[in-house]
Length: 171
Image (tube, rainbow, N blue to C red; front, side, top):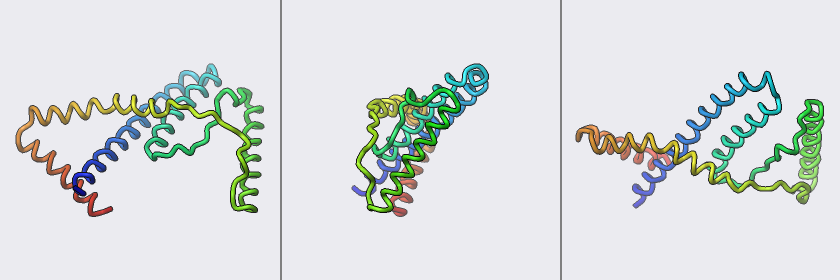
């Protein structure tokens, strides 16, 4: 039973890593296009597009690490002017430094002083991106099983078992 559960864990981790890496590459390509096409004309639109792709990448990474303890700042609160944005960032760092000094003195963080609304759709983003990115490898695997030779199918099965055994013995 331990070998089967280890195989399932290996497959799940490989799939989640695949989803995150492909999504990161796709979002970086879109960010480069946005930089080249949007930034010269509108810095505000460029920042909104980039923040969307950052949110997409980070929500996938946070869901991957099964952590819901993250802090987000709504884009509407960030000023559009460069000087006002710099002052806003300095104020955030001042609050962070104050909280850290409080933690150093008391061994805990102060009570919540700023409530950030949670965005419930990060799980939906992860599921939809996973479904979109899972179709090509699943089709390839199905093609190998349905039309491949016995040697190819045996190679895929033995490769999966070998990876599971290595994973099981490592952890």
